[in-house]
Image (tube, rainbow, N blue to C red; front, side):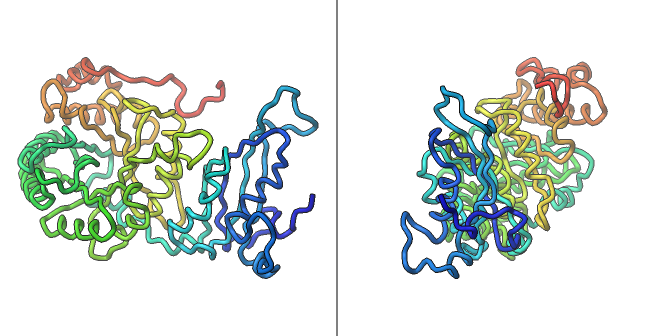
Length: 438
């Protein structure tokens, strides 16, 4: 076996600014030569094919070929394989010259998980971008600090409410529900991801009705409320939707970034004429991330990539409610939204999908104050009505900030007590986020 030294390199040998490094999980048959397999992935996605061609010169290879910068087996067999083994598992790291695809999502995806997505058990689990690549992305206009400044809220988590039922409401019915939950203490409301501009609830009519209702709610509660209006569509129509919503008075927008596309999402977030926060909805993530063997990791498609595309808040599924989600996946995604990423601002994790008042304490234990606690039915289906549902969330947030257990706070607040009686009080174990006991 001979591997070209251009292709096989240590990370320390790279001109780091030239490369985006992709990390993959790979599973292969026991007899597979993993070095050749991983090198073939990098060659396939850059300048090579199944056999050498005349135009693949040393100059072309040096400029464009993918470099294999790491192969790590788990478990790490070193001197032999068990006789009953049927599969070997590896972490493989490949560095791609980003000059091949430029600072955009479509061609980056084509490179890092294009044809090789059909290569069997190969899953893209992470991407590392050099500063030279990141500098071409503006990132969120607002992020965590900007949304706090807009709302004037600096010392607590924010509260979000999704309008429910998801579809079928008129503009007036939407506005009525928005008023009730806003007056109860919701900071940010949102359209459901299923609604953009249906005939029974046209976008401009919905914006005008809801913003008038929120003006009354803000005057009553003495706080400001944002409403994320869904503009998701094809690129040209989505920009038109954004302008239509803003002209009608919208103060926040929503994009289903996976179905709309990350380049189209970036078109909106980097538009100088659009100066309101953008909420990114993560629907379709599961189609890309749920397989343990292929696709992309949830931390990429549900956190790092939409953050790079410039959304200010990202709704993500939780392990608490109606969708399958592992707790460590949930926590990892939230941290990827908040941790430093060059000049790209931190963005708000917005856990949703069955979150109730009984989950507030656990969410805040994991993320602190820089989190948006999101609930749909937990507010609209509250036994005492949506205003009381929102109040119950704010009561749980205030109690946690004060160091009071949610069930104890419920003894003083009928709204919170009613929520806990309906849906329970969640407590995950007792050791916090660090647990070396397994």
